[in-house]
Length: 346
Image (cartoon, rainbow, N blue to C red; front, side, top):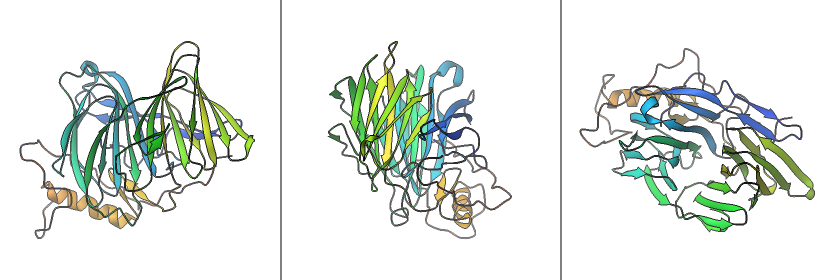
């Protein structure tokens, strides 16, 4: 989905160290627009942390009463230099993109759309959806891959039963399961359900940074580092918060409260060493690229005149699919690369 939060996309919320140095990112509310203005809780990017591994954006929404919010109403909009990941806990969303791929996303399934050089798509909650609940995430593509062809993929994950709960592996490897989805660059994403008063132990790749998002319930997190018992760290996650785990963590225990089960999303990937510029739905490397992407989009959808015909970056698109979403006005100041802290905040 597009972000309408352009100039202030890393304001609000914040990244705060817990008592033991683990970094907890708290969400902030961002209105996305729609019939009655759908609002999401955004935990990435933050003022102090822009990425977790390659993951550069995380919106958490619902459970929303679609009759009250209008649901997801996202007309055709563009992306460059990133991949979008959509995961639903309830409700269905219709996806259509300029690669010619269209499908209905359902709970327990993942849609991955790699924008590469450029892609455009639309997302609408289905007419029968009464409650909409899920997350949408983006990860940045490294420079060597960010100008590649667009591609969309879909996968229905099968739950893996583990002591204390179950795991749905959407991308990468988790809990002994491997997703068939081609992410092009290393990235993992999984949904973990923890039974009430139980715990789930997960092995982690110590070369990765990880993020743990609490969707529902209460959960305590115990982290084992590369050094064994001396590396243990613990944190209690507030509702909707995202915990950052630096490289070197080799396992995590998720402990649910006694009153109800808990659901968490686990993401990860190698630290992203490149600086990125992110504005609206574009990921580039400098201000000039963002200006170019915006101009090309405005020309393709007929908002600005095109001086001469050029191959479309974000199309073609199926006819009769409704009006496209124009780009917002660029900020008056230059858009600078996002700084990225190394390791947890202190």
